[in-house]
Length: 209
Image (tube, rainbow, N blue to C red; front, side):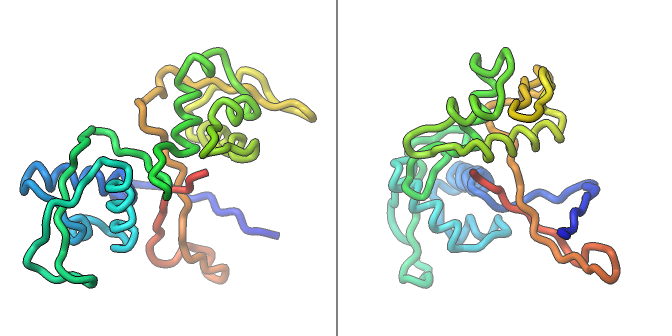
């Protein structure tokens, strides 16, 4: 039998990783120094440097950032490149590995916030409306997303589900917090079954459908 842990979250530390964080740091670096380096992003983050480099490369491929020169410092691959944001925006560009914008969670959030979700929506319709050619949304993914948002207090249940029937949900007006989707996080922790408690620090990263 699997163990289910219910974690009580107190005052949480900021998660200094993920694309939204990197983008915020990049905009601040450009405003202050006029240029960006991956090492400067790394210094302001708690993340794998390879993940940062992949994000910067994806931004270059998508036309948001361009390389402008090199610093005098040597990095692992030679002189460190400098970059500038050429398509600036407050919201972080949502990039798949191919550089295509959009994620499943963002697409589903947009549907819930828009006219298609205004009168209530079930998981099947959410999956259909949020899917694109590059980002298909499975029914189970949509069902899980609705369940997680409902547990967090974002959704009102208009019709309960049952055998052969999906529940219908609507985003609460008070929880329409903005264009950025609530992030469903995947936790990594060590649970000691003998002591009955979590040992050490727990970390979390975005779980993207």
